[in-house]
Image (tube, rainbow, N blue to C red; front, top):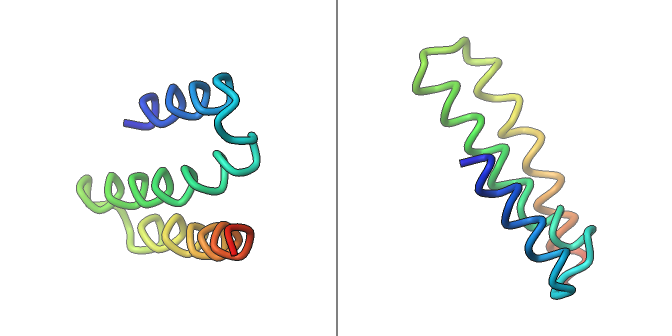
Length: 68
């Protein structure tokens, strides 16, 4: 799934639809949540689940701030 997100990023930036910053801010929170899901599914320690979720929140807020 992370590879699909990387291809989507390359497409959106390459086609000129979004700037690299906008594409990054919109796609990274989802990628971080996927990493947290993966950690949960393999039974990782709670810190490995919480860390990506915690990191996704400020990126999501930055995206919302820029869209405003």
